[in-house]
Length: 174
Image (cartoon, rainbow, N blue to C red; front, side):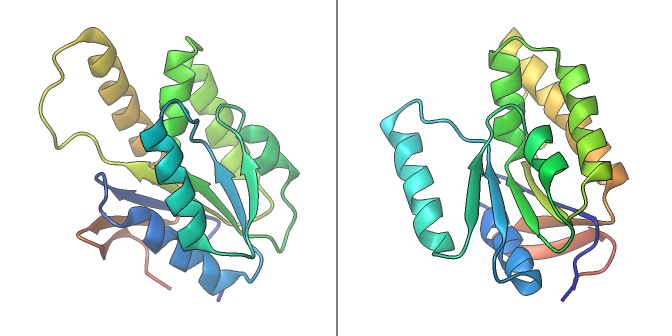
């Protein structure tokens, strides 16, 4: 089943968004590509990555791209299907590396627009939580909100996932 050019899957932490995004990609491809943005900084993240890999199973090509996601998106071929998981960790990496967030976001959006393959992007919805109490958290929350809005504006399909249930916000579910 074909996917739209760009799909955005949003949700809170542990909402089921990654599992839903993976199921969308697997509907469209037997050999999907997974662009992983997570970096292992502690045992908890290592375990989370291990569990994600285990739940995906075999058949996925994984590309680790904590900051430069534009390169694998630009290298994608027609007929591939890509899962970018996730924009939130990517943005965190960009901010912590003290890169220009707006420039990196523009590069990401351009790479998504010109990607030869359909892409499903997973991102956290962070605007429904408490107001952050420090400058870095404010910067991150505001940047994540802007990025999600930009991704949603560009996407053909936007789905919010809550308690494992997909709620289409824009476009039609396949």
